[in-house]
Image (tube, rainbow, N blue to C red; front, side, top):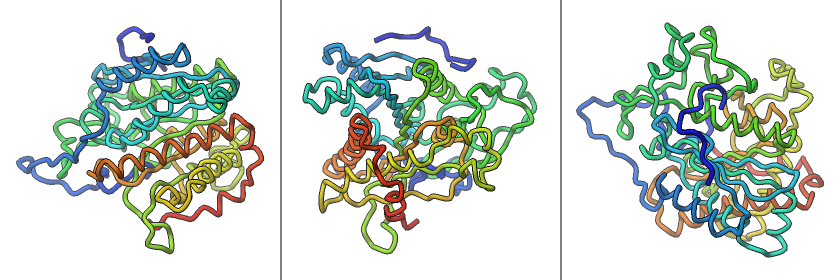
Length: 395
């Protein structure tokens, strides 16, 4: 396992994920003396366990998986990437940018292990045609605290970016307390609002506090690390063909039914740069590829539908009228990546081993649907209009 110098990378290096236990800026505040009732995390992977598992996967992969430390959280926990495959098509997948959205990490580890060790024709084709870069648990401080936000206060941001002295803290800075989380005594940021389509952006005083429909700033070490991995892949391959972000949401039903949603998909995170609504993104119009993003989503949907009459078939579309350039998905889509959001039902509720296994398997099957269709070029033949046939989520 390769490691970078053990310092936080300073210079460059969504509504999304909002579930029934997810904190919002307007969450009801309780008194300091009230008890904090943390949701359960039994059965999920800790950061130490992630380290051990990645080391084992690398050791037993016959050289097919390479694991690197690519950055550090604010509290000096490693942020990893695992690379498998050597193809020209590049796929970047991340999980747990919100620290209480944990199913994606287990699914991602299972996938890396299988692709790295399995020598079936399908897995060999994946390794030959696609370079898969997985970043599991990209918000390890938040994961250890079992909360959405990371662990970073505004004074620490000022220390890194002195030009922000006197600026109002960014809108995604959590300082509240409710029945689940105490950000008042231990503040943090929603890392998934800290991205900017301008990958070379340096924080400017006048860009604070902004809002959800404006770009972020790369002020958190976690977002800086993800951005740097993305830029490195651009430099190496010319483009990052696909970016997939694994999240959780609340418990919803498919629109017009009482069928519980297993997971939701989406390809739309900003208005199209060629439309009046998306005019502010016009500089990205030449590389933005919404149709390809929709084809990738259709590939995931079709793979899950093929599993038959089961919970894996209960797939819906996430909210479509979004303008979230500060998310990783919005920023990277504007940079030309086909983008896919997975929103698994629930947060860290105790569903039981069987249900959690189903949700993990659903994420894996959706990912394989995308990767296999990319390796065989079948994704480019999928009907873009099938995307709009995916049922909506009743939110």
